[in-house]
Image (cartoon, rainbow, N blue to C red):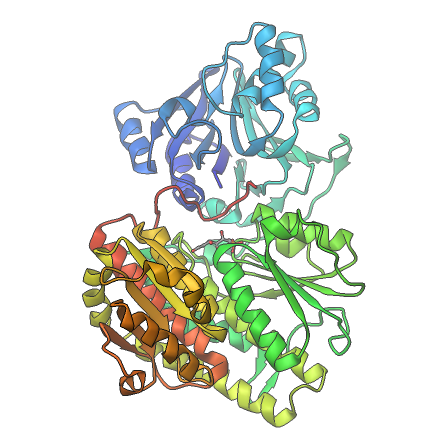
Length: 606
Ligand code: F6R
């Protein structure tokens, strides 16, 4: 949520700042901007909208300077217009910020009374005036920042440069991630290591409350009390990760097609394929006696967690509580002594999930997380991590991260089941064999996308679309609806098939497509009854199933055939058609598939 970069370079940094911002655009794309110290003065270029608008601006009005900061914005305070775009600045200081300054109104009032003139609607501008005020009162740059930091409440990552200081940048972290990159006679700052990958793989991650004084010769890091601290220098693997679309038109398409490979990588991490066994890392808790598992996550990751709940309850017979992170943390849920709290997150930085993790820790839970970014805050604050090996996911709508999360969750459910004796060794082998088949089965569904292109014509004309599923397919109905609405902007709802008659059936008429996720499992008969209820009211049914359509006993608008598989794996298999339906509908409608409006990839604000 907002990306920030900074470079203390050996030559003009504008081009490199834009290059780094390109790798951070997934964090927000409402506006972008850079500021540099040019002949001792601060100057900036900003542009509303995508980064390419800033690039066009820079061609017309280049910016020189060897010291600079940059920002790509996901608007929180103030509309996404150029005036509110970062960097914000006074004559003395320029600031880029990710997060929310919660006490900005109070600060603004105080500073306005002292004569500071605010020009934007942002919370960030309060930081600029606060530091400027300190400097006007005679403090040097570092002391002014230090004093300002003590007065800020909320979550922030900051990058700060100063007029007349060509060899100084200050970074500060409280609640939002920040990485310092070490180069040869150059230093870098970024919201994540991927942004810095073209420049360096030597990274220091700031910890909560840290702030750093960066100069070309290196960085000194201090904790929130101002004591110097040493943070480890780690080698980032981000530089080796290729972040391009390959032969695909969109990152989302590429990531959908990568699923057989990345699911296979993730499964290999947790399966002893030769012996048909599951082998997950030690979670530091006795799986045989854990009284309850509490799962929490947001959005798509939450739907993965919901499938995990069904699997763990079915195969391990352990009670599972699940809630979206923004609710669990505030409803003061009692958590049982010795319980396992499990967090699912692609980015590992989602603010609500992280806050819930801390709530669970404070309430005596053992913390495990399923994360894609191993260096993330959620991973670092967990007692045990089950990584997903999806690689960087750039499309804002999550696809391959979801199926990799499911892969890790399935392995965890089997491991729990074995530890408790709820499943036998033979059953474990059967389930492992089923999982091993998944990458191959998914590949068969990616060969021909024509049915989805055709169906896109039906969905793109709809005002509302319903998704139905029962049991393990219910979370897939929710995920299908989320995918469609976030990238095509068509209103869609996912419902448990059995719940339809308790209200949503009132919506059904000839204009409402109803997508039914109904693989051939022990719940199929029940779902068929619900499908017939829809047919009786004229709804246009699109069936995603391996069952013979004859069995459904009513007319279908379309049948998307999925391969026969073990019931354990249907959520993984059914994920692909719901992703492709959303993707092709969005492409037909001409929306911005990889960067849909109003969204950002990494949601680091509450
Ligand atoms: C939807 C989507 C979001 C994320 C959610 C959690 O396609 O991507 O709903 O799943 O914002 O993000 P992470 O997994 O990074 O915690």
